Length: 253
Image (spheres, rainbow, N blue to C red):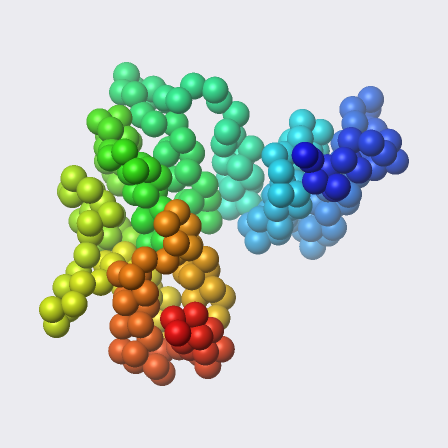
């Protein structure tokens, strides 16, 4: 069933704004107009605009048309325009594959990587998510491995993410990428995530919440992931803000 917001959008004509005979989403258009008031729509604002368009469901044709109209009518920063074009392009093709210079790639993986680098570069968490998507319980097919190699070569990563990605891409099973410290096995990707978070001084509450949520996907938080988080938490408490430490400490109990 569609969400109440979506039902309202399709059932109330007052919700729409007609310009030159074309119907647009009034609220979404007003959000774009408000974001452009200071001269241009920023990348951060584009993320909020896209989240509003999604409403927890797929983006409708009218919402898509509204976003395209907004891009033509108002000024967007280069980063914002690139991100919105990537968002609009994803999921629009029915074919499982995308052919580039005669080579067949996995379209879903490419789109996932594109969305991940919409903010400029792929993070460790996003690199790990790409591998888990490719593995999906069945192992990695030849096309998926070719796609991962293409992503590694052509797309931008943070330094930590590239370090992780280039190591794990060599393995037959990316889920087996562990790091052994003092005889204990830890998730190498998670360790790199926490190292990256601490670069600006401290690990924030938002960062640990995001990591915990990501770890819950699939089979839930594994014993290895819990052990890795405990290791990161106990290694240097001062690297975490008090709210971040409290949140993760409570979850791990």
